[in-house]
Amino acid sequence: METKVEKELAEKVVGKVGTRGHIDEYLTETARKELIIEDFKKAGIDISSEEAGEIRNSLEWFSGSGYKWTRYAQHGMVTRPGGSVLKLVDLEDGMKAANNIEKYLGVAPRFPQQPVYRGMTEVADKFEKMKVGDIWEPKALSSWSSDEMVAKDFLVSRKEGGPGSVLIELMEGSDQSTSLTYFAGKRNEVEVILSGKNRLELVKKEWIQDERYVEGKILKLTMKYEGTGSVLTKVVK
Image 1 (cartoon, rainbow, N blue to C red):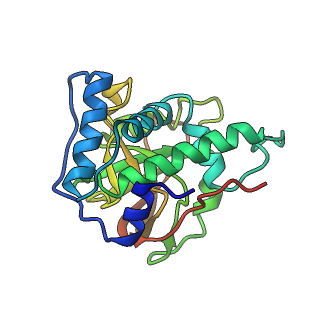
Image 2: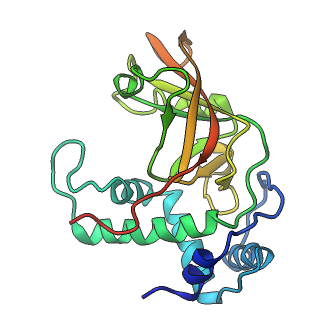
């Protein structure tokens, strides 16, 4: 059943109020919940303490062990990349969290207009065919960093890191984003969360090398925010 928040978000164009950068200090669970309530209130929507608590829990889960499950669910996956079958209950948990976070990103103050970066491994073949002017729609929530060095660390933080790595620079960030440092356990990653609804346009594509992080070449893509699209809201069975 559609909740009051979902109904109000569907019936009006939510106006984001201002921008918000990172935070160094730790926020208590209560303070995090109050922040969410205030963000919705500034956008003209009242939510209950219970709803705010669920959104807070989803953001905290995404910044930790729940990251992959939100993405599996939004991508409509039923098996892991290795071929094993995903449990329906895990996908349903992932989709519930993804929907909570997407609702929040509709009202949360966007991260300031500055570049954010994302490092990925073994996906160069997926992006190599893109041409300048092409649009990429992630279709799932994603984790970025305002520090390029943090993003480059992810190029080698997994065993499969190496040739095939991709570094994306999103110029001036995205309207559909917010700082995750208010909810993340590791604030040193200066994490920024982007909605799966983002449409990103390729501005520049180049092969670079940085042997401090990875042996071989890195495919660097420079993109810009182009607008919004849509994402799955129900688990594919």
